[in-house]
Picture 1 (cartoon, rainbow, N blue to C red):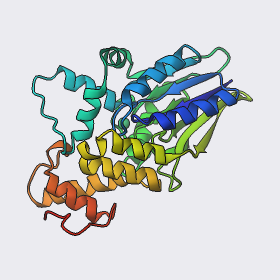
Picture 2: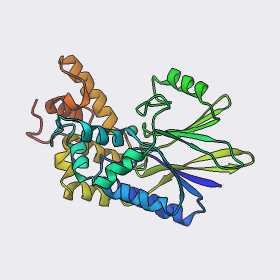
Picture 3: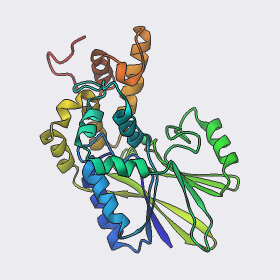
Picture 4: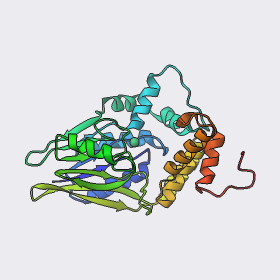
Amino acid sequence: MVLALLSDIHGNIHALDACLQWIQKEEIDGIVYVGDYVSDFPHSHQVLTRIRETMGQYRTWIVRGNREQYMLDYRDCDTKEWKYGTSYGSLLYTYESLEPEDFDFMERLPRQTLIRIQGTEPILVTHGSPRSMRDLLNTKGKEELTQQVLNELPVPYMICGHSHKQFILQQGDKVLMNPGSVCFSISGDPGISFATIEWEGGRWIPQLRHLSYNIEDVIESCKTSGLMEKGSFWTRAVVQSLRTGVNHQLHMVKAAQRIAKEAGVSAELGQIPLSIMEQAFYETGIEEPKKGDLST
Ligand SMILES: [Fe+2]
């Protein structure tokens, strides 16, 4: 019994299709989707459509990520404040690209699910943690939280995503794993991070995996779709992360939040002024500023 674990696809249909091609060639018995299928790259609707197609071909376990939750919350809120060219431009692009059936699908996704296969140990699947889909387990500063979550875990295995960090963590009799991100690896090696788990010898054996594919097609689609412009510095950071295998997005957000706090303005991501995002974008070295680029 071998399952493929795919997390954080983020609208990158080229990367998802590369994974599915690999899965077709291997002896894979099922697919586990760990959340965040939409936003950041231009093909969120296509990704959700493809996931639905694979559900007819493979035994599937699937949970909702925080990006799906953003889309559902935005649909349900009265004030529509996302604007192009801001930190929320990329989310607005995604929101406008989704079809009614995508919202129906996202709404039906559970926050967590249990993989129960006869003759194997159960596995809990959730995007962040059972407490919050935005928890970043096993990252810097989250050691205590990770320990608590594993102590409370009612089953021996858990799969999470969200941080894009690929890892296997064994603590006592519990195993926590994150397959990394399909949309772009943050291992320093550009490409796709995902994982498989195999039931063998009375236990689940995880294997972290990496795939290379043609990222130039993805970069081109960001340009031709208009997302590069509409998503502003966010999309430019995403594209650079794709090229380098470094999580530039995260570094930029951290820098922008620090600058915002120093300037005494809101450090809430969507409220950070574009000039501060721009400063953070260049300060973290994502791109070299061109003459006349910096507004500050
Ligand atoms: Fe996430």
